[in-house]
Amino acid sequence: LPFLLPYALSGTAIATVWQFLLSKNGAINSVLDGVGLQSLERSWLLRPPVNTYAMIVASTWQAVGVSVLLFLIGLQVIPKDPIEAARLDGAEGFRLFWDMTLPMLRPMTIVTIGISLVNSLKTFDIVWIMTQGGPARTSETLAVTMYRETFVIRHHGYGAAISVVLSVFVLLVSMFYLTRTLKTN
Amino acid sequence: MKIASVVRTTILLALGAVWILPLYLFLINAATAPKEYGKKERWQLPQHFALFDNVSTAWDKAHLADAVLSTGFYAIVGALGACFLAGLAAYALVSLRIRWGFFWFLLIYSGTIFPFQMYLSPLFTMYQQKIFGVRAYNTHFGLLILYIAIAVPFATFVIRNHFTSIPVDVSEAARLDGASAFRVFATIFVPLSMNAFATVFILQFTWIWNDLLFGLTLSNSNNIRPIMAALAALQGQYSSSGPPIALAGALIVSIPTFVLFFAVQRVFERGLRITA
Image (cartoon, rainbow over all chains, first blue to last red; front, side, top):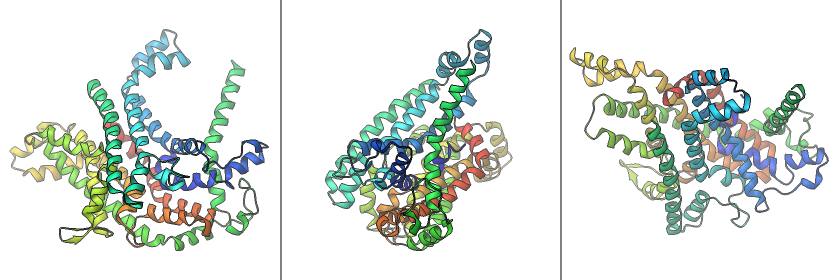
């Protein structure tokens, strides 16, 4: 259950925590120091492309909860009989999962991937709090660029253009998974 | 076989530890006094348990009392308002069978698909003027109607799904006996769908509580802005207040959704299953 916990928390709170973990005097560096891995220490949020990877880790840490929840629902919905039959036929462990459970979870897998993709495309909170897209715009997402251009430096036209691009991407992904789910239903 | 299971357990335990480590570091450093913070290693337990001091510092510094009140208002009234409107919309779609029903449904549902960035800028411009003769930018009213509007599409989707599971005969019988459309809605559909309504309420409460983007964009004063914008401001003055205070702030703002999430986990799972 602690694994689902980050899901109930906000991107802002998560970003505050991870900013502290990853800052130069932060906790991750201190832990690495403690276990004798000084060579791995770095200023995680100040160097591209490491800052982007670090924030991907942070947002994964938060987003896993949603996906687990969706898969749990999917698992409850799939019929038990075929699994039992396969088990009687001698399938077990990984093979049972790969050949039986996973194909039957397919509709839910598509929805989960679609939702995660859309959420990731719209990433704003985590990046805005942790780096504000910096240093020198190296870690901006489309949503962050749009916000900065429109509301910080007031290039309304440029900001609007970025939001059009973002909307097109989001719509394409949404259409992909919505048509797939509608078909299976 | 035995070695394999030992190896597997070890790997799982290691992965679990890495996953939980951020939580541990978060909690112990939120409980470290700012004075002690510079002297100890981050992973060590603090000598003095200063969590409550940090919490009260964060509370005062970020004006969290104001923020909790306004965000509570947005989240509770917003989620209730969305439930009510979405319930009416779903009822019209499912039971009243209005013309072009599927079109209206798609139109409402499309609200969950478009990214917020698409209308953020026009919204900001629109909020500089009055809506229904009331000032909208940086007011409780302005943020509340926005949150209701954004919560309605998903709420309609969930409630509509649940309404379709209510047998048509029941409502038709009631209508034949002379009950008005609204009466059927209020005395049959709503009581039968309490689970769905509860799920929607929880999800929308959590969403509104956790929102940062609209709070940043459409408000700027301490007594209006929602709590995540307040935390962002506290976190922004990192250098002046120090990490333990920011972490304590992050802890405070997480409590309501955290408690809600665990208190109603059962309802939540049952309700989500309906949507699946």
